[in-house]
Image (cartoon, rainbow, N blue to C red; front, side, top):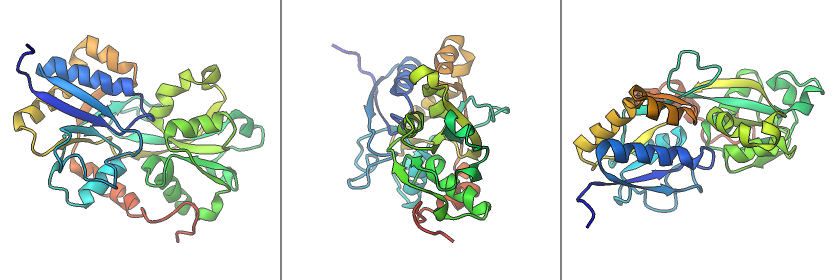
Length: 284
């Protein structure tokens, strides 16, 4: 008979933009550190709880969830009493993240052929076909709209629009020349480029936008306080063990750092405030 261990139900909404193996590794870490059983659900249809059904926190279907910042901000805006932000977030390697701080970036990518046509800045992409993961993505569309607005542009800047469904698909569209440019989650590009055709050498990062808010880890408010604390400690302390540090480094994670609700206020909230603005209409 199996020992009487606590069961922790985990769901990730971050795949396929992030590799599912990363979340399997987190599951493995938590089982080892907490002496628990854990299960992982992979939900690729949405960056957060599906909007057409009860969320898994109020129905007590999950204990821990990995989702996008925009999905968390939507839940928070609904005053959901069953969610809490776990005060921990991963820190990813990136050429712009020289201080190793929480948060991530949006990489504006083009095919190398575009360089031959004098495309050197974001503004040189006027009228070109744009691939984006979804309209609510901070890194895939919102920060692009915000940046263009700051440069005196509007949604007429875009040529054709292709909704890819994920950052991974956006990058593949640029590589295969279905799209001329895309804005992709920097962590997606970091991990997956080496697995693309010819190592993805034909994908060029034209500009990097951000920094964007940290990836939120959301916990069920009904989970025992000592379990929440144990999960936080396991993640915060992993960099102290070389074996775990090496395993997470394969996914670009340097460490886990302290996080709080404040990270989703200020500039992040201002960007989220334009959520009703669309890529294919004027927005100012």
